[in-house]
Length: 356
Length: 251
Image (cartoon, rainbow over all chains, first blue to last red; front, side, top):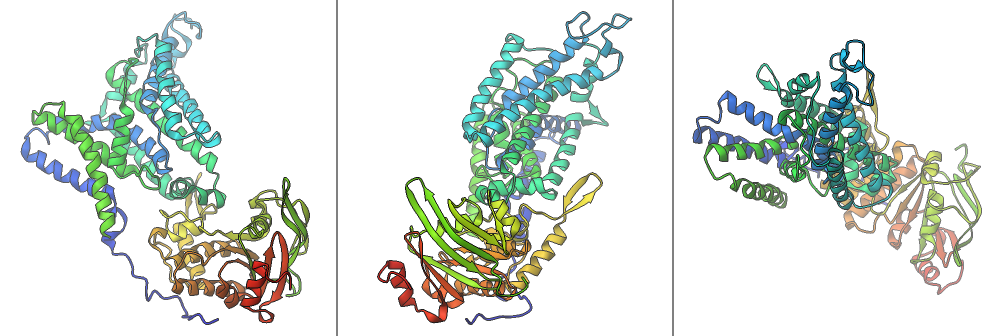
């Protein structure tokens, strides 16, 4: 057997990819980020109001309202799955949170004991009601995520069908528990709740701060932990992931739980800004969330995506919406334009990958 | 592995039935360290069933498997992997969207503790992967995406994974089926590297020239039975073809 043996290892016939063909420069996220910057420069000249502090705060706040859920669904999309129940999840978690908040604050309600001063016992610890209510809201999200994950990973149902069913189930439950009326945050911790959800710190909206923290955590998890590596492997080649001994079922359940928790948290934050959790809250938000993730470069076939892309997608959607308002374009055009951008973003990436 | 005479894998009387269908009947075979054994046979001859039994996908209905001299029972593939049997699958089981190093370490990532959290040790994994590619003399960069690699490089990544766990027996399922002529040579080179390091290799292949190029011994299966087990220099492609097709019953 004659195989040429050169020693030590050399790279004679394998070229190194040029730096601009690698990493972010070669990704859809990179192109969309560039488009976003161009769009913002155009807006700068189109409208003097665009770069004012008030408008920037507005933009930051508005995109943060879907961006946290987008971070969550990006995990699912990277594994090659989809979660259509995020909109309903936002509503249901928000509703449970405000209902628990009211229930724990109401004197004489069935769950709580009255303290000596006539207030409920939990009300005497500042913030405790809020903490319990938010945890309750997140707990129902956790349960829904577990059920989604169980049906998909263990029972082998398709993610699309499972979460489509869950969309309806969870929305229905939101109507059932509130009798269709929705619910309102209340009690002694309501002001704290509003401050934490729609307030700001030194001019930076609170939701934006949460978003940045969660995005950084997500980047570390995706790229520097074995869980993140397994999430990508699952989207790249599920069979390979299984053969190499990755706990496929566990990872799948985990991503649906993460997604549901992110949606739940997002819903709770939105309800703080709205001042209520109506039963039709966040209807069809799942489409915005998926659109933002896809525009930012997450691939529905799996294997690609990240927090930067998720945020860039959300910002782009919001800047377009904001720009159309400032340019006094009929706001009904907004949806049409969003659709065009989804297709364009994916198209540009396709053309680029054909060229190389 | 004290002496080359102790077989790393020894099968005796292995049989497998799926209901009324007898897929394997009374197969005896052994593989020594550093030996490359070709497993040949037509479709349905029982090759894949045999491989799956050795890899722990199926349990044999009859017979005994001995590994390194000890009787072993595999209930799941992970049991076979634990004793040192690795399979390089035909479709290689690589995640295209990950780098070469990430694929080599998939499922057994190296980590560093930072307080309560364990983060991936990218540097250690890349340098170990580069070392393995060096051992295999494959021009593969740890940081390149598998998506962009040639068939030969992909094989190197899949084989490097078996080296990582210090497997004693590597089974390769049709490694040269879907790649170019030049890359076939690379893959056969990789098999030689494994042999040099004392790893036993079972090569499952349809390609006669490849088997005759690298194997020390060839085993021919037909209708679930072992029909021949011969040192490669005592047989010829013509004889093996005759054994596979049944023109010659046994040798």
